[in-house]
Length: 415
Image (cartoon, rainbow, N blue to C red; front, top):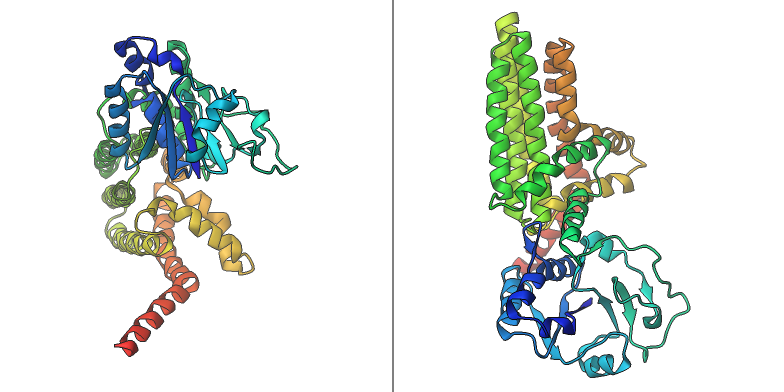
């Protein structure tokens, strides 16, 4: 897909300082034009055409190209005098550079890749040039099914006041499509902190490590064994869960997602649970003696096995560079396999096992004085998790493994 982004002629008429200030004003830590470019790339644009006024300062143009390269994006810059998208002459001058269909994106439109990917194809004569549009040149034969969107998700940054609105919009939509009601509530609590962090040098990985540190303190509180210390531990673990929400939100907000960060987040989740269960084991042991140690060992073994098997499943269910797509891919496989009662049950229960919901269970059971029951259920759940993970690895991914073996065998025969 091609994306076309045009900087107005106005920026060639103002001073270099003023032009840089407006074009590169930070929106949640990312310069405005760069946010527009990167969002287009994340929405699927592999050819980004940036139209700049002929009189725009060369240093600003070079800075835009270099900034895009830091995100791994190549942009083509074309400098034209008095380009106006409403005028046919402007498009005629670009005809050699345009594909038959392209995404028009205003330079100051702040939105998310999900909303851009949903923009419908429309006739070029119906385009509102102040908003995104997926359109065609007049010379291209038109389909009668072309329709214009009546509602566009995003904010056009035209003033300092719009910056705050744009950042609030981005933070509000920094979650995942699969978020449930509990996770959405957690993210709502995190929004002010994520927006604040977006203007600092704090990285998503640093937030992840912060969550681990809070989990350590939570485990120490649980290990004290008394009711009020356990309640404090549960509340601290809830806060650690919010850190788990914030690192992903911040990564998406600042375009800092990476396979390493995804695996680190998964490791941090597993480590947090191991710390939690260790603390609970010590705390319950103070009341119930050796039986708590035996159950605790069984729980820790199950948790380790669950962490290992799910990590292996993540690698099988996704490509190396997109481990964040694991849950979405797994849910799709469960949906397709709904004829199998095990898949159907797991698909219904899976949503309730996510950390964004489990932190509520831990607080609830602890406050009600049912920590021993939670201890037993967690042990049972940990072992069911790794057993079912092995089951689904065999059910969903055996075929792909067979294909690999077949390919290897064919290669050996060829040699």
